[in-house]
Length: 148
Image (cartoon, rainbow, N blue to C red):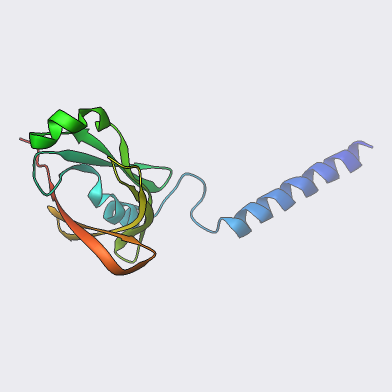
């Protein structure tokens, strides 16, 4: 009885570990490709909207990238201070040199659009907002907010 219990336990452990390695062929749970992570994490931080009065902050959670409004300034302050802290971009993934597969949520209307980002240089980020196909899109150029 003890031998069959030990054998069953060993069999379950080997099946579970074989199934884990087949579905997760990477370096193991919690470990990522450091070079790819470093590349993908380049968008993390504060970025100015085109008018340079408002800022959004990109952050990473569960291997996806998100952005929220951190500062509303200029002429927008009077009408839109209540959107500070709201999520404007969600669910981005880094693939082939761009962040895509996410959603842009218009801060005033709540309408949702597809979004893709490309980093032109360390301080310039192009955000393409579109619905379905990228043929008809709007580009925004964000500028990194450098620490003083």
